Length: 515
Image (tube, rainbow, N blue to C red):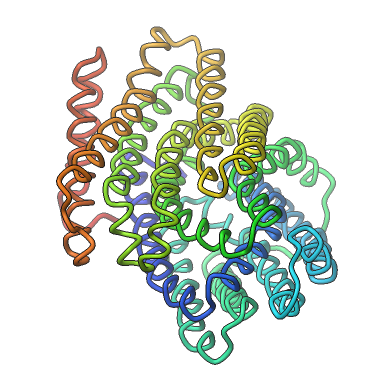
């Protein structure tokens, strides 16, 4: 029922391992899918995925609310209350989620034809594409509720195993089916198959491991109130986050041809791989913060800021490592045409990802404390700035301006996050702490990455000649950013805390087994 820092690091290791497998397979299969489908059909698949994305507002909010409530009811004496919460969450997933899936299956294709001005053979495939994507999302929604049983217990070993099995099945399906039916619906159907496998494995494992905590779907008024009260603001928060991540894709589909959505999707997929990897490592902080509700406020804020420094250090290094090698990496991965079109977008999106990392740990902290209103404010401001910038910049500068809206949105997100953090805590020296633990590692990382990109461009090295040269340059860049950021952390008043936390991490992972 209580987890220490060693358990937290072990959970992060399992989350990271699952992510490495998932992102490795996804990045490996993407050029294959892009080549077989073509930029047009691949772009249509991206538009269908973006159209289904609003449904994630419901499923993510429900899963977060359920995980937080279950994390507070792990004792045997809370079994009956936890069963009512679980039964209500499953009933919501099946009823509301089922209605949302039916809507997308019936109305998704006609609305997409109008919004994105699609016609011809590509438009004929939309009906099946939306049916498969809608069914896949419903499986994902129900599976997310079942996974909260493991999330609440911080059992990331099982969560990681489920994710790996799902990804392997979806990837295998793509390799087998896409060559015989190179359509957007085939790509989306393979993704849906992976979600269905995840649902089956999660249900089977939860029955065998936590059978006494399961309950048949049913609505309980008290449980529904506890899920919906924070969930309402969480819906708003998820909606704002949706606009921040999908605004460019929506406007590219409405204003330009589908192939530009495909180019943008390629650049975004690489940036997302690194960004979500860092997010997965920090995801274990959500149930961890939820279990600290009896700790003092100063203690929780101290853990929040120190966790932010570690995650920001990783984000700046991992995402910054992409910036110097953006062109050669895309050239080897997807070809010269895509590299020429998308490398600048990848650089800008990587900068936006580094800036956006400033709010990740704070978001987990707010969710764990039930402060969904603040989370909603951050997401709404981010979405508004992103959407407004994208609507203006895309029409003036074309599709290459897509990434700049993400940067503007993340700068706005950072400003609101820092404001709320300083307002909500009375910890001494809060301004200096925020600068040292949050802002400095991100700023140093961005500046170092851009300098390295300028230096590599000036040397005229042909990095695109081989994978090993691109990989070596990226790793050296990430290592240089990490070293510079760590050195910078020793210039402030909290250098002893930074050294202690780094020493704890090195000590934890020095042995071969991190479990």
